[in-house]
Length: 257
Image: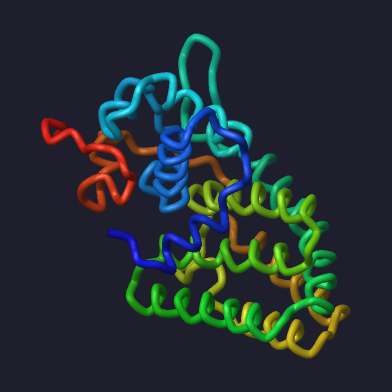
């Protein structure tokens, strides 16, 4: 069962896309979690019937969830072939991080004038959870928490359009990192997040913007932009890697492998 901060981090990454039903929203959240956790790696095929078997959901519900993920840019739907986890090219990887470099400094600047003590405390808690994940060797969870931190700053800025862009770019960044990250440490295992919190607390808009830009440039520098093939694996086993269907609110199929 996921911890509260893990659930919160995945929730922070979710874009507010209308879905056909509450059940479709549950499948959407579960698939997004599996993708952001890198249990479903880029290039993994996502057959509607197999996903439906895992979550006890109809193909219509699964299709709705996959369409929403496609809008996020983390799933690619191929005509007559079905859905796969998006597999960003080197050019797309550069484009995503260059877009973040343009957008996120401005967002950080706006957040510096708006951050409340409660919001700063929440950011600090996210960084502490990220550090605990790193020290525990859970780099996948640390990456999710790191992405959530960036989305929280965008939400503090009270700029919904930019927040939507950041949410999508962070989700796509997670896929890119799973393919191209070359450093031994996780993405934000530097003092960058702590320094950003300090700038926000001081109301230093220019400083926050400069720190964010340098941070995104550093992330881009950590990428080894060479294509790597995804290893095949059982979709059902990947989706239920954490045990029974995690608080999905849907019945698990005990007959699954």
